[in-house]
Length: 233
Image (cartoon, rainbow, N blue to C red; front, side):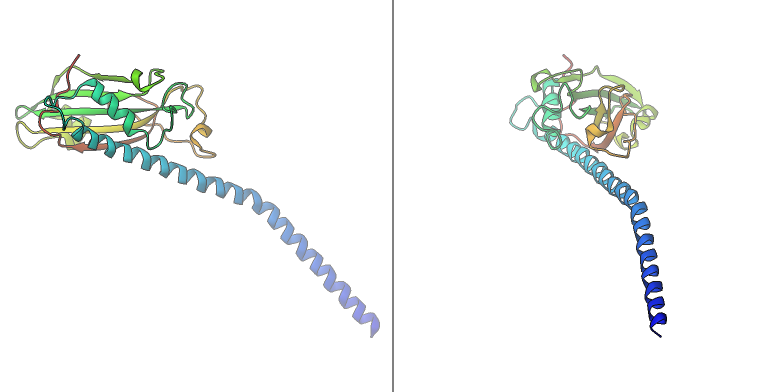
């Protein structure tokens, strides 16, 4: 009788030891999976955070575009206006001088304004203006900014830029506001500079033809009368 009890206890302890060993093995294998899952969740949050930031910058730029000349008699925009708009609209993500050289995040900020005015059934007046923290500028006073020459384009060419730029009536104006975070040094960029641990942000091409853009947001608006075309200097 006593021998049978000891045999039963020995068997139970042996089974308990095996159970503990199995749990330990499962836990050991689950650690890398849990860590990878945490990194994946972190990167997705970072992705949507940056996407939200660039969207907010586009709306900020559009709002400032409409309001910046309210107190001025001459409403026509200049390249300096686009430079100021670009700098102010990127402060929701960049802090201090992080948008300038030496680009601690590995990116700089660019905002382009594509202006169109329908002048006939198939012809449009077209101009590109922009403000950017690229070209190794180190402060707001050295912003990369310009108003390019006014061109004439067909409806098909305007549609290729963005379908929402097509106007219904002659004399109608529209502006595409395009904001993006653009990689500065292709060879030196490290995704960890933007806070990514696993995911690599997708590279896209902007409407101005530039490559190495990580995040882009487009917004089409109707500008106030007199703002465009920007002054070509």
